[in-house]
Amino acid sequence: MEHIFSIWERLSDMSRDLGENYQTVAAWKRRGNIPAKYDLKVIAAAKSRGRKLSLEDLAHARAAATFTDAA
Image (tube, rainbow, N blue to C red; front, side, top):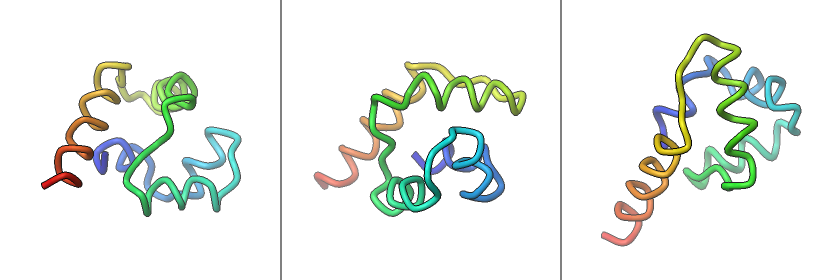
C-alpha cells in the first residue's frame, strides 16, 4: 500500500486532493489500508497528479497488505 501513498509527497496533499480530513488519511496510512469505498476518489486524484492507478492496483495493494499482516 505504501506505493499508493507515495503518489503524494505529503499526506496533507493527499487529503486535499481527496477532499478528506487529514486525520482520516493519516489513519489510513497508519493502518496501511485505504477503505475500498474511496477507490474511485483515489484513482481520480492520482490521475490528476499524472499517475496511472487502477482498481486492480488497489486490490493487489490490499491483498499484499493482508498477506503481510497474516504472516
